Image (cartoon, rainbow, N blue to C red; front, side, top):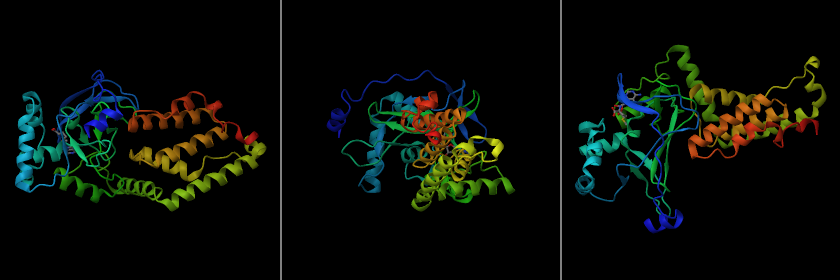
Length: 336
Ligand SMILES: C[S@@+](CC[C@H](N)C(=O)[O-])C[C@H]1O[C@@H](n2cnc3c(N)ncnc32)[C@H](O)[C@@H]1O
């Protein structure tokens, strides 16, 4: 695996420069320690980049006793500073874990990899990043950069100084309140009191429905329907060219309805479903360009740039669209 990494990333692991600190680790009521922004952080910006204290395959074909010996010897081999940092991390699993090392790993590890030619899933812990608490409406997301062998934390959207930086521990944030609590209670031994879980009555119902709307649009059938609906919207927009431009004729066009609803739900819930948000934003950008609404193109393209950067480290060309709405091929398509 190391040879494959060196072949793919010359000079592996490539050096990296830790970004200037924009957070501090402080006690947060009801959660132990947490990460708080010390200055305003822009959407897509890197909050932290750290090498893991150590990496370990998630699954090792070994008996429980052997696994325990392997875990303990890995931690024993660490540099004393890293060993101290590791044992200082929270063990929320206590006696429910087979050992202290496994309890700390289970509480704090992030996904690491994938590594070329090696399919195993790895877990890595980070001194600061592992202090980030959970929210069902997180403002940051974790990724792993194999080239520099670093964990990276980036902001989904702008975070104000003094705001807590949160990530999601859930395998799926779009499930119900009860299902979310169950996963967090089994895996991390806490009852979530984030702003979404504190909602009650009608507000909780609206949140649940919004999450269901997002979930439903990720299925292949609805995905095809939304793509088809956009084509219909587009041909209507082109057909109604002249009258649609003149609001006095009562023909002003709205953005494609389902895309506008799904995007509003994603923003409200802070759930940017990979594989869906970019399709939705792309259609909203195209539709806004067709309607020659420069501000709307800028707005949606900037959101796409921030999310793409947060999830992958590169904006995918969205900032160029945000800067030059009139240069997109969709601009004024109606009048062509
Ligand atoms: C990875 S640690 C996060 C850092 C931890 N708060 C600390 O003091 O080191 C995960 C643990 O933090 C606590 N925690 C994280 N998010 C929480 C939340 N939303 N509500 C309550 N406790 C939370 C739980 O004890 C959880 O098992």
